[in-house]
Length: 527
Image (cartoon, rainbow, N blue to C red; front, side):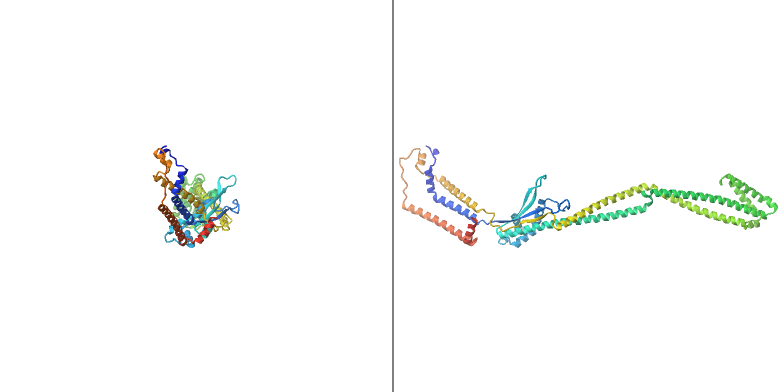
C-alpha cells in the first residue's frame, strides 16, 4: 500500500479531534461570540406604515367630469416629489430630531438622502372591471424606517398627512387654475367678438348701399331716380318749348306795339319785313329743330330787323317795352327760365345720384365678399366663445366638486401605528447562521492546521509511507511536566475566554445598554 492509497479512518478523525480540541473549541466559541455580538448589537430598524385608499368620484362622471383626469399612479408620483422636497424633509428631521446624536458628522444633504432611503411608497393594484385590460391602482402605502419605534410612527404619520393634504392642494389648484384660464380665454374671446361686431357695424355703415340685403332696394332706388330724371328732362324740354313760344309772343307783341307807333311808310318797310320773317320763322320751327341752318338764319334776320326798327323809332321801342302785353309775356318768360334753371340743377343732381347708385351696385360683389369674410370670422369667434363658456361652466362645477371633496380623493384607510417589533435584523437567523459558520470555520481551521502539519501519525499512515508494517508500536508516554503545561494552557485559554466575555459585557453595559435591559430585550426578541 502506498501513501496515495491511504484513506484516514474514523479513529484518525477522532485522534485529530483530540489533538485539535482546543483550537476547534476556541475557534467555534470566537466565531459564535462574534455572530452573537453582531446579532445582538446590530441596531434595530422599525417600520411604521399607513395605508391610503384612492376613493373614486362620488358623483357619476357622466354627469360631472372632474378637472384632474390623470392616472392615479402618476398623481401619486407627482405628490411624492412635492412631499419629498428638501424643505419638508429638513423640517421633519428638525422636528423629530432624527440625527441629533450624529448631526455634527452628517451633512443636511446626507440627512435628506437617508430620509429618502428610509421612506417607501408602495402601490396596491387590482384588476380592472371586466372588459378593461390591465390593472389599476386602488391604494398605496407610505412607510418610514427608524431605530425608534415611536419616531418611525410619528414620521410616517406626518408623511401620510402631507400626502393627504398635498393631494387636496394639487387637485384644488388644478381645478382653480383651469377655471381661471378658461375665464381669461372667455374674456379674450368676448373682447374679440366686440371688436368684430364693431368692425361689421362700421363696414355696414360705410357700405350700406352696396350690402347684399340692400341690392333690391338699390335697384328700386335707381329705377325711381331714372324715372325722376326722365320726368325732369321732359319738364325741361317742355319749359324750353314754352320759352320759345313765349319769346315768339314777346317779339310779336313788341312788333305789334312798334307797328302801332310807326308811320305808314315805316310799317310798310322794316316792320313789315319783320312781321314776314317772324311768320317764316314760325313756319320753319314747326318743321325743323332749333339747330337747322334756316331757323338760325331766320333768327339772325329777325334780330337785325328788330335793331333796324328800334334804330328808326327809339321812342316806339321804349313804348313797346312798356306795353302791358309785352310785360306780362316777359314775366312769364322769367318764370319759365327760373323753372328751367331749377330743372337743370335737378337733372345734374339726379345724374350724380344715379352714378353713385350704379357705382354702389357695381361694388356690391366686393362688398359682399368683405362682409362674408368679417361674418365668417365673427361666427368662428362666436363658436369658440360658446365652446369656452360651456367649458368654463363645466370647470366651475368641477372646481365646486373638488372644493366639496366629491371627486376622486385620498382617504386614510389604516393610520401608521407604533411597530411592535423591528423588521430587521432577524436575530434568530443571524444566530443560526453564526452557529453554522462557527462549526464550519472551526472544522475548516482544524483541517487546515492538520494539512499543514507534516507529522506522520498512526500505524496505518506509517505503513503507507514505509510500504511495510512496523514490527511493534510504543505508546506515547506523557511526563508530568507536559501534563502540567497542557493544564496551564487550558486554564489560560479558559481565563482568556472568560476575561474577553466579561470585558465585552462591561463594554455593552456602559457603552450600549445596561445588561438587565439588554437581557429583557433579548428575551422579548427571542420569543
